[in-house]
Image 1 (cartoon, rainbow, N blue to C red):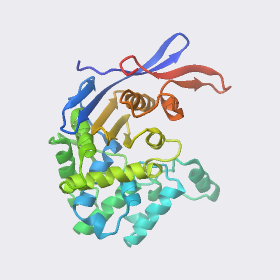
Image 2: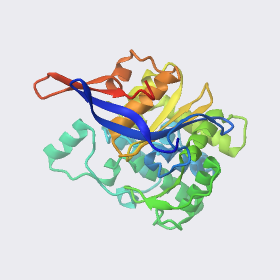
Image 3: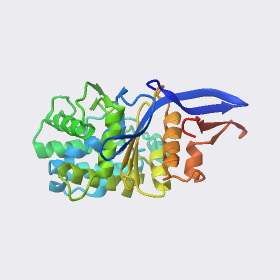
Length: 331
């Protein structure tokens, strides 16, 4: 089967009102497909789901150790976080340690997703800074790598030494030559691969060894950081954070724009990549939760599981009007 298949259904009354279609692949540590839905060869842009791949050169180059980065720094380099105080304070401190400021970032500014942080800016009449951007941790990592490599200030340019290192790591991880790139919301290049390639990369992370080569050692440190600090990877109320906390064994999760999601199952040495064809986030969150249930690492009765699969839809009067639930392919 090569067409997208039903993953998530939106029910109202006695039947499905809407359906989110998608593709997904589960790979073992050797890169072989264990299970797949839709088209494993589908060419995709992983968006922020591949941040751990973009962070690999930060470690393999020696930049992370040269600058004394901790597991919190590494988690932030893989993050798409809410912009809460626990995020922005750490990124500001990271920039200060480098002798840099918000002006050195190239990710752009947007309002924080965190309600308290957003309220604080509104009440003080303060405009958001680039550090509020959900990708500023990744960009602080880019700046650290750039300092180590001696590159120019425009580190997001596709031909820049930082982005060349990122592409090399991306292609090594996926086992593919990237056919093209798009410019992400944070202005950095986002390289394409097949869905199988992205699942293969996540499985390689899952199977990496602390006694392996430089790639393996970097991969282990990055997934360990994500699992140790789920609150820094996304934030309170977010699927990545809530589902990582809910899993019965270590699992690293990362969402990406346009309904992409990855999972790294460490004990089982499996990697998962999924894409919802219409870009609907609710479809991706339900699908990844359902795959985690299917793989036995998420209790279907856990409150976090219920929030994203078999979740009630409630109207403005608090009346339950429907449900978000997995389609038969994932149920």
